Length: 250
Image 1 (cartoon, rainbow, N blue to C red):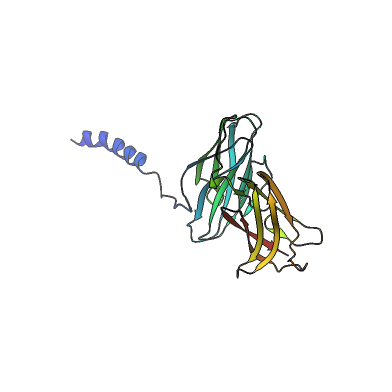
Image 2 (image 1 turned 60 degrees about the vertical axis):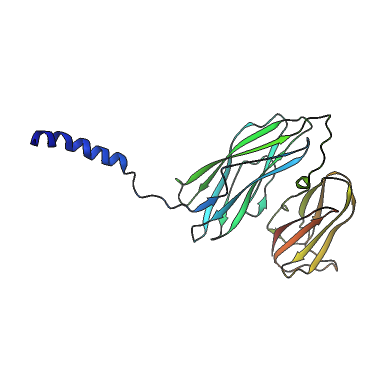
């Protein structure tokens, strides 16, 4: 019996070591999902989003990296919008802080061309404070066939995050907003402060279908520089309204 116990004991200890992998690492962020997809017309800019929420109870530092672009059709590109910013198309990795309790869409926008197809990229999000905490995400965008008239869906109206954001006021500084009309018609884009007061009208005219952009120099309708802070810019067409926030610093 003693010989059996002595023989069995090392095996028992080894099994327990295998079963125990150390203390669990508390999750610092929550994802609304690990994959997302969207669709649009050829030559569209197609935003695909997954919401990220900081649940750590303190600020965390995250890294977002597109690790695999092999699923992009020839001529397609991507743009990362995160950390309250839209980065230049083609860039693949960015780092930044996320405040406690903050939620933000991790937006991978697919820049397509006239050839119909489906594009997929893999994205890795990593907590730089705890590098072992990382999650792989899959983003997919699809464009329709050429020669087929696709009725513009309400969701095909698109408003980008301004770039750069935060936007630092200065004599010659500008921030740019890109938007895409689903159908030709009147468009207005206005900037509001957090009290809901209109600060500046950027667009108020008939616009054709497709992509347009507008610059803002941080001045109000009277030509005065606005105070630093958070502002809301809102795009309104005959059928839909979309808004986003921007941050202005000194």
